Image (cartoon, rainbow, N blue to C red; front, top):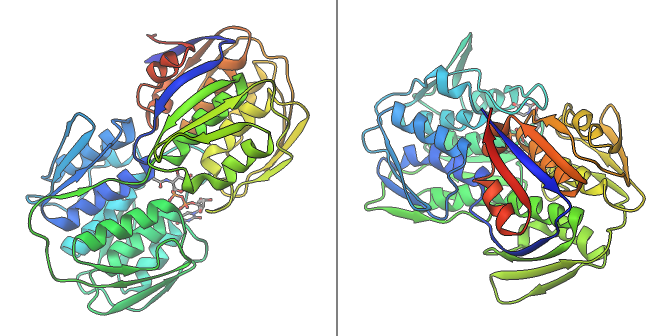
Length: 419
Ligand code: UD1
């Protein structure tokens, strides 16, 4: 098992490159099964969740290999619609395989998918969406989806679930007519999936809005498809909140900042200097302490992302005044706050509301309990005076590739050690 050892107090200076979005890469790896051929995902991060999805592809007969930061997938020989529970139990994103397998084989079978322990994480919205198209779902220990003859029609999601929107899009491709999906999630990662499916010959429209239409397709592509997903707005936001916590100046190399408006507004309102150097590089500097962020409420895109809520709270520990954070997506997402208190953080949680105020932070030994909560602990450790240890680094590795190297290159003291 790995842990991070951090000596806090250093400001961050230098250039950091942002990779393709994890939450795009994962459904795209699943969707590559529909291609029945070769796909390359560009600028893809070798994070743990991606590596597990690659294992899942291999376990059903496909190929998945990294060459540098290009992920080569070949799903020509995929021959099974049964997913191995040893792998699907590891990540929630394994659920995306369902829509892709139904589209290709008419069937899919999965045991309860895993993922971060940040709430109940039921799959009823997925199941209801697929049932709307005539897919039969047997919910035992193993969940079997039978959709040899998928109907086209109307799906109305009761909540704009990201994963259910993506599964509905892929399943609807199997129908012969047009399917309309209402109350869709509008996340940029869904636009990436739409664009990829259209490269395969599908006619998907409307991603990024609340209504998506999907027309089934017959035409299979020939040759290799190369696709670069949008930048990882959560990775980017994590570096911004780390900068906000300790100060300094970062050059951020990314294809765009456009999906992060709500986060950037916090920094602009805080008198941080933000310059675009050219189309790809942004320079952000922060001198002195940030002011509190007022009241922040998480919600589906374009609201404040729940996946940046823990990092924002860690940053708010160093900001002047009181910040109130309301979590409206995952009911158990403040679990990490108990660990933040060990640094001396003034954090109080009242069900789905968290109040955080400027704190005198000192080093502490803490345990990461989930991916973004782990990133929050790392940010707190960077701004705390003295030495900290964060165990269970594996959670952080699910979403950040060699984060200790990236932060060290910016002047932070972060080392990885085994225990
Ligand atoms: C995706 C992201 C995750 C992010 C989340 C919300 C990926 C790989 N993961 O997860 O990083 O935190 O969106 O932005 O893209 N829900 C149900 N029933 C369902 C499905 C969801 O009740 O069948 C609830 C969940 O418990 C949660 C809310 O809906 O409270 C949002 O979940 P959802 O949007 O589905 O998240 P994921 O797709 O799992």
